[in-house]
Length: 93
Image (cartoon, rainbow, N blue to C red):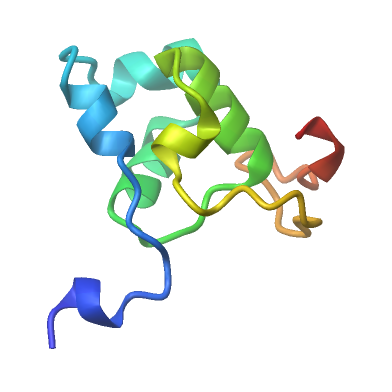
């Protein structure tokens, strides 16, 4: 069984949308405010991004959240913390 078959985190197109215009993780981190190490974890599907992270990344890449994380935006409350330790605010959707 490969990692993708067993992963509970849905596939996203963050990496594809980032590398298409040749944007590095470091550059995306600077423009989005999401730490580079966190972007790496999200791209490798090791963690699920918080709603706040999804918003920041979508704005930095000039795409809709649904285009980057298809099927993951449902307006539900997100109780996980973001990369700063703050609670994610589901009211941002």
